Length: 318
Ligand code: MG
Image 1 (cartoon, helix red, strand yellow):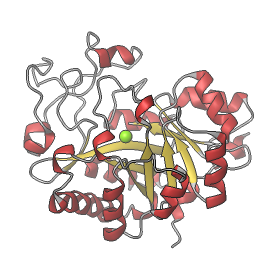
Image 2 (image 1 turned 45 degrees about the vertical axis):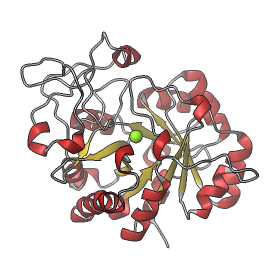
Image 3 (image 1 turned 90 degrees about the vertical axis):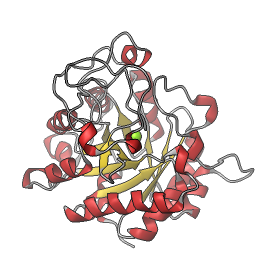
């Protein structure tokens, strides 16, 4: 099957794509419309973001399954206290007035992003909010790396899982964005469900080796991830067996040999989440197709310094 959106995620001679992680988390509040607008204005037209489902079946853009005290304020501006409720136990009406425009600087998570802007009144977007923006004429070149977060409490609930995929697919189809969207997840079984329900969209396989997991203050994907340690089979080969279009390894895991194997298999390689200059440079050296980053401007500058660009538009401007 031909997937027109894959071209936007494919690198080339002097070309490595930049994908804004949750927008531009290092600079702007993550997974907010304000952050997405900022990223798009940076000339970065590939957006990564996370989707979780509410109790009443609304796909919303947020990373953790529970509302996190270091990210979420109530209408009065107070950080969420006490037990963190699960998004899947709340309705959209419970979420729509919460403020996710900043990080609590006293928290471990907040300390990770000291340069992130602090906004008042930034809301949790619905998937439909972002899709409606991207469907506008000015954003026809924008592509979505849509990560579905797999609820660890519902891994065996096939109906609930199929419902999440159906709701997400319905939103993307409703706005005519199936040719500009990649379905992205750590949960490879969920990606198989995406393929079943929406064969017109390619799938992207996230991986992270347990030894390198160190994302303080965030949900970890290990419960939903497949066992990648099967002897004798490379991860790119495993992705190919799933008929994947793109492999998205954690940047500390990936080797030159794996990138070469992915190339042989015709897989695109996008690495996450690459933020430090030395790491960005190493990924450029590996010749990946795309770099997922919290600091899109920093990656642009490293690419330019090494004679690369990140889009066809930048090729023309060079
Ligand atoms: Mg994500």
